[in-house]
Image (cartoon, rainbow, N blue to C red; front, side, top):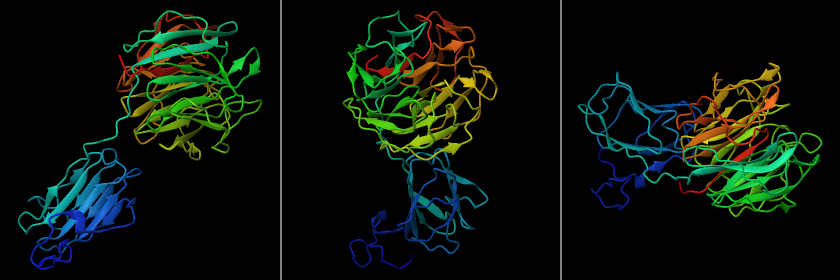
Length: 421
């Protein structure tokens, strides 16, 4: 760029703009694993699926400028790698590896001379990262003992489960829940008196469960629900008399929308959780061992296979602000309850199995609490329903069993509420 003023936004001879505003930005977002960069260009680099190695121009001139921006805030997961292509980078030759690994980072580099080579004019991360308000308390409700029940148990911000509270709407099992409006909960659907129902019950910011509201989409059971976006929810899949792939969005005021069809493989007894910034996923389940990612707009993606040990009747919770964990369940292939867990990264990748996380059981409930932690509770192990919990740390470590956490039951459903500890 030596002697050129084509990127001078003021078009004043001899005054070269020192900002990226006059650069020629590439209109195509870079998603590949390699890029040969050109001087005077700006690039949006999306490393959601892989790291990207950028090769800088070999014949650089003083004043050459290039800008890179983290398009999807994923450089912390898959790095931007700089190959200075024979020139120095901040005074070091190109035998050194130069990685940029901060989410939301932008990199503005200018070529100085043969001694120092390429120099960052700025390499700042965007400070105003969207932050989803996190729930501090939780509640487990409903389930089955010898028959369906309507009891509930509050969970404080330290993960302590309180004594039973009775009389919280129609007794039922096999229902699902979502957090909505950032600080309230909603239980919906399930089986009551051997009938599959279409009803919901709101949970206020104090953990009080409201009376039944009927007519919330097609009646079904053994479905899953999760939060998405910043303050909304989604119910999906389940059993209506046959497996279904119906879904229903929930507004930030707790209104359940009409059915949406055709969102991946129909299945039941799956689980769901939030991950990343406003995204979510449905995973596992009987009859189709797949994962379906949910965008921050509530759109469910196509099936992704290969997500650890196939199983159903498991639970899921978010943890650590932007990650999730699935655990427990019944393995049809193994013919037994299991205690395996699978972590989910902040870009929605389900990891391989981790074993040995408490008593193996199925038909378990789970939810987040304490801002960045999770809890699995209740469930069914051979011969009996259980009254126990397993806390999940903010790093995704599942703790040993703690027994005596309210009436033993299975199919209890958990949801987070309240932004106050």
